[in-house]
Length: 133
Image 1 (cartoon, rainbow, N blue to C red):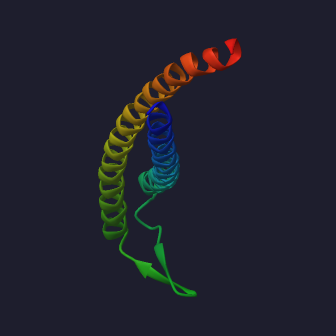
Image 2: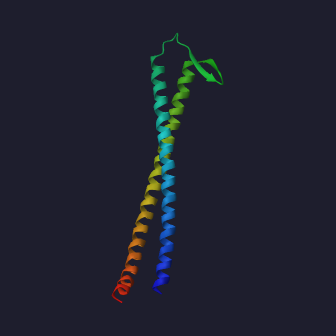
Image 3: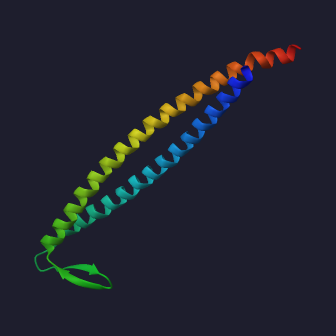
């Protein structure tokens, strides 16, 4: 009977470990997305600072394919501001996603620890008996 419990526990432990590894991979992807968003936010904030330094006689160009096309400075600035707002919303969404993933991973980790302790407790007495025999 103890062998069945041990085998069942080993299967649960292996399943939980695989699920935890999958969660870690998902978290790495979320962290990577967060870093990309940070980079985009920094770039767009720099562009916004450049717009603040423009004079009325300066021309703003937009890259469309291989060519630069003149664009209204106010329209370009509004586009950058909208992009920044979108990026900030995405950062919040990704952070919420990361927090949720971290909570799930912590729960799974605690589950694995409990399974390992249970596994060791089951092995302990039988291992001790075989040493005595």
